[in-house]
Amino acid sequence: MTDITAQLNGLRISPRKVRALASLIKAKDVDTAVDQLQHFVRRGSPALIKLIQSATANAENNFKLKRDGLYIKDLQVDEGIKLKRFMPKGFGRAGSIEKKTSRVRLVLGTK
Image (cartoon, rainbow, N blue to C red):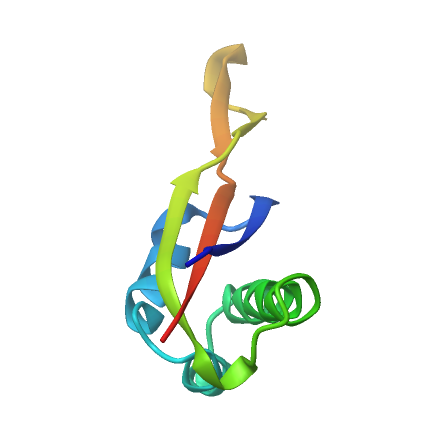
């Protein structure tokens, strides 16, 4: 069967924080995963909800599949590009700050 994919690039949250949410919803039904994410008080929850809804819309519109038979087959959170910033330190030096981003790939499967 075909796999339904959706991808989120440049999410401005570190991958470590998004992976904590991703590990909780892997291999669950789409509706169950969205319900759980709505009750988590984490910054990455709304972004993952939006990604899951995008993937289910792809499945319904492009592949004519029912929402009831979909589950999260694979959810990968990788490191995206880093925004490099600098902060002044003592004695005229500059300390570097790396603002991390995430790249999230979602694959839905059918039962």
